[in-house]
Image (cartoon, rainbow, N blue to C red; front, side, top):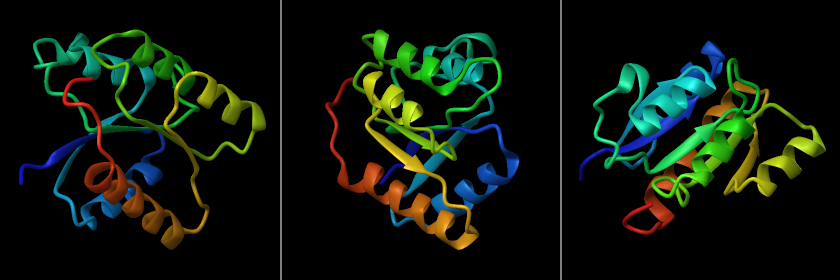
Length: 146
């Protein structure tokens, strides 16, 4: 089985490292692309900037998106994903430390498929991301073309 691509949009280096470690432990082969801010995430998805020329026909199976990002916040990234026909059905999981009720509402109002609070505990965070990877890559089904 070819590895499935995950786009991890995360500006915190520690959370990035933990997520990468957890995703390596899933039973589903995966390849993780990391974007460290909202603009870079959109550049990757739409083949712009440093990703100019990338085959945008090959999109991630799922996006794990933090909310509090530099340059462009997660809600703005989510809106851009949902407004483009090429990515409008792409699964997007908000993976955030925010407990703000308005962030939860804004996430779902703008088309998030899931909203997950990052656990503070190291082992719990690793286990949660591992389960997310297994679900979104191994269990969930999406249309052949976004």
